[in-house]
Length: 312
Ligand SMILES: [Zn+2]
Ligand SMILES: [Zn+2]
Image 1 (cartoon, rainbow, N blue to C red):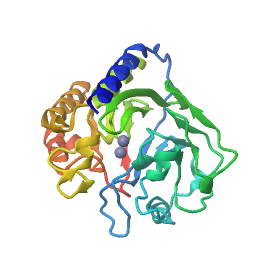
Image 2 (cartoon, helix red, strand yellow):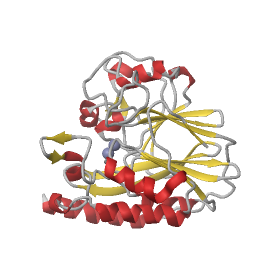
Image 3 (spheres, protein in one colour):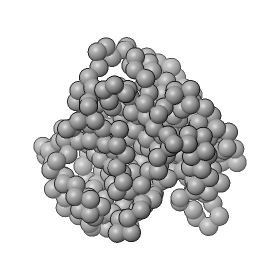
Image 4 (cartoon, rainbow, N blue to C red):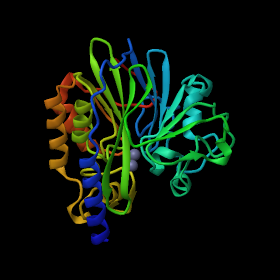
C-alpha cells in the first residue's frame, strides 16, 4: 500500500509540475452568480434530503451549470437529488451543462457509477437533457439516464463553458486507497467582483486551486465555495469508530492523515487570497473544521445548506 501511494504521489507531482497553462486574456464575465446546493450534508428545510455528497446548481448570468450529481447511497428512485430538485422548483430542462468535478461516488451518483465510470442522477429513468458534460476523465451517463444527444468533453485542461464560466483544469493528487485522483473546480468571473471558485471534494487542495486560478487569470479571488475535505475530529462516513473520509482523503498513510494543520494552512491560503465570501461544504468536512472557518472568516463566512442559495 505504501509503495502504491508513493508511486501515485510521484506521478501526481510530476503531472502538476508539467501543467503550465497560458493566461486567459480578456476573460468573459457574468453580472450575477447564484450557487444553490441541491445535495450536501446539511439543510434548514426539514423536507429536503441530505447526504454526504455534492450537487450544486450554479446560475451564472443566465447560464446554468449542474456541478456533480450527488451520492444516492441507498440507490433510490427518485434520488435525493431528484426529490430536492422538485422541492426547490429546479427543472432538468433548464440546465445548460453538467460539470463533473471528479469521479468519486459521492459526486457521480453512487458506488456503482464510480466502478463503471458512469454518472446517474437517479436509480431509474431520468429525462437527462442533451447538454454538454465536462469531466476530467472519461465518463458516460448510466444506461438509465442515457441521452444519446449529450456531448461529453473529456479534458484535463482549462475550458470555457460559457463567457465568464470556466473549468480551471484538473489538478491531480494521490489518495490513500482511492488512488491517483484528478479533480477540477469551476471558476465564475462576476463583473466588478472577481472570481468565485466552486470546488467539489477539494482533494487537489484549496492552495493549489487558488494557485491555478492565479496562474490563469489576472483577477481577484472573490469567493470560495464547496468541499475542501477536512474530516478532522469527525467525519460524515463512519464505520464504527473509523472515520473513512479521513483515511481515504489524504496523500499520507492513515495514521498520519488529515489534521488540524491542514485546515489552518487552507485558512491562511484563503486569507492571503483575500476572499470576500467563504462557504465550506459539510459533506466532507467536520463541524470542528466548519467552526474554524467561521471563526477565521467571520461575516464573510456563509453556511452551505441544501436549498439556501448563496448569492453573489
Ligand atoms: Zn466529495
Ligand atoms: Zn472525492
